[in-house]
Length: 439
Image (cartoon, rainbow, N blue to C red):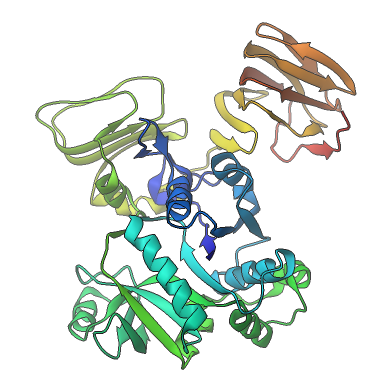
């Protein structure tokens, strides 16, 4: 089974745990069997592999998410990088071309495309496998998944099938309606459009060549900024005469807001927090190393991270995006392929950061033109390379790098934690040059 996971957006409705770098699918709030926590993307990846250990998983995403993906799901998954956002049809076309031209997958092979962030159980992934079989063996060019609706939602598009069979020809698609119109659609047997599509690779490549001028994956990648922004629904699904829908009646939740996210949490408190006896329907998600106490609130969420603190009524949590968009703040936490960093202090001419380097990883060999840096190793041991000179480092060691100095740190066998102090009149994430490193 070939799966393309669509991973995009900043998920600002889940601020302060999500930001411009860490999207909602990377937030670790789902309890695992070993007592730890996993993110939406980790949960999705694990569930796919549980149903099909040989599944080929490709993530269509932006450059800013690559490090987090590698951090959370490792190197095995393929990544189709979108140079910029051009909506779902170009993203799916690029990922499909990646499978065919880079990974060598045949045009006759089926592919299932789905979002990375729904909250689902095993039956959903068994349904994806069924979709893949329908795409391989059926006469339809395109098969979509339709969710049995539980209420007349205004958040989803609708698929109206010809009949009530599990697999039916699609009569028509409907855009996101108001609640009254949605109720009428449901009376007509409509299903929620889950944004899940199955097709043979050659079919989407053909559609892509019809709508975009390119030769192969590399050519499309180079021209990506110039292609038209358009959704897969508009470009392909709503115009395809040979299309069918497969019903899915299992659990399926869109984790787009704090209200829906907390419904999927197995416990009301994650992190340090206490909820008073008089509270009702209250959840706490705390990434800070300080306690949170909530008293006398009802139907509320309290979320805290290095980015900020949110206290909100659950229903009102759906409307926080414009307020977050108006904030001008520095990213305070991010996961990288090699570990993570958390900003501890911001001054006019200095930045203090806690850096965690995973075992067996290293930073890029790099330099900065406009700032000096000081590393104070607080735990673990490894090696630094500064302007070509290698030395072993341990807890308590201090390494100083002047502007223009090439440097990296390497953890061979154990986690390293260090305090990085950046000093300069012009501190910017863009002030970084990368170099090849020959050890």
